Figure 1 (cartoon, rainbow, N blue to C red):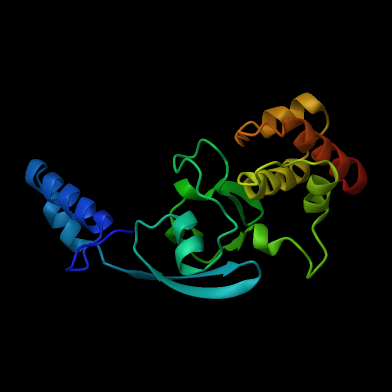
Figure 2: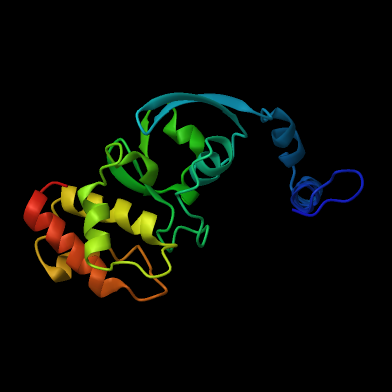
Length: 194
């Protein structure tokens, strides 16, 4: 990220400019901004390990996982909850982590793509994605796999149309949908609840 000689990044400048603009145009915004703590401490479980993180209150779970916890398997795609690349599980339910505040995960169990294998043994869905060539560039693959696991566990893998419906929040720009569908059907047939 570019910064000038004073160490101010482009992001710092944009945040400061936006805050100043909002404070000048909306009554009470400046007071509310001053009351918000700069950082908060959260405790959560990530991939089976208890973690304590100090974050900005408005930090997304996605950014917290990538920047604070060092888990970069969860990808930032659209950053608007529309592509599914950032899908993770919270307490076993799939969520798009770009639209989830990290503070919402306080005291909860977060599972990312890094946490689904058993040591060197891949999760059945990971293996099925390899077996069925369900990836091309691989960027969307972590989110696709996390959603696919949830799709099977939720009981939505009964037909190709049902799988397509419940996986519709995950986009693949390369068009690996045929392989993704085959991988999910394979896991659903062999493992039932993945």
